[in-house]
Image (cartoon, rainbow, N blue to C red; front, top):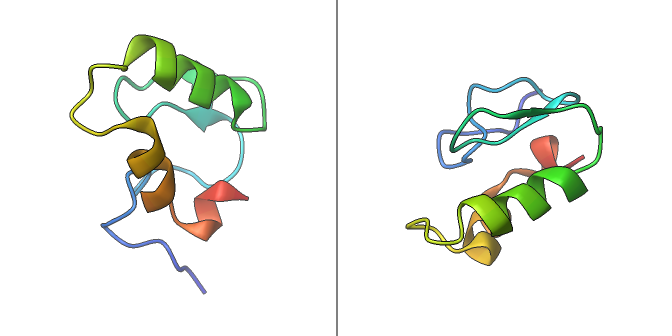
Length: 64
């Protein structure tokens, strides 16, 4: 059963690896979120959505 909804910023993106930045589409080989989080903080720090708010909106399905 899928729990991801359109409220998730990763909506429509594959679940699991590779991880992808939802803002620019950069693909990361790392299967963990660390690379995406670092990228988001450095490349999208002026984004309309602060990192903490963005991360809180990611569904559990995409977080795992």
